[in-house]
Length: 293
Ligand SMILES: [Zn+2]
Image (tube, rainbow, N blue to C red; front, top):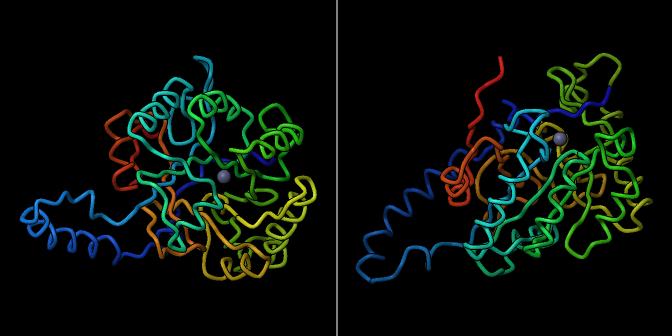
């Protein structure tokens, strides 16, 4: 009933992307490049601080199970990716730090944030790897799925993760509506039978309330199910008390970026080292798995 599925990059969220941002950045880089070369300065040293946010879902520990792809990565590949980050000197940011980065606080570069969507219990397989490198991570939990079966984390696991000094848990709504025609945007627009804007609001307020009660601290960040949102939902989330909202609109984050439309890049578990390193540079999503048919 509540099988959360692959967050897709919806058309809706695509339209939210600031289309002017990338070309302008490219242009500026192109204009500056000869000057930098003349001055003997490296482009990297003068580049503005940037922050890619990597999104994972399920971790595959056994040979069987769902194939590596958009929402599944093997623990072997995940370990490789964390090693590459470590070797390249990356510092990992918590969501509090992501929010402060967007407000202009300086963090040592290169920086990255590692996040897990949906609250799959298999994501616990990432824990020893993250521990090994002392990496921070954020877990976005579907509150209504917690403890509903072996696939999902239970409350003891959620609480344990959240009490770690390096991990934190935030809201991914109560029930994670994701099917076409039945997303939160559809609810608000009155396009889903039996669902209204009030129901959508409850997904935001109730998941916040329950998590705050279970964790005993404020839960001020929200992750949109399937990455689907619009301006009306952003306003609703703000009203509900959320101060930062994460999307699956790919791309880098920069100081001064919109805390209510944070870019993140889903990591396709079928991608290799070359693609992973490219994502760290430009934040662009890469699909590597063969499309299902
Ligand atoms: Zn999700």
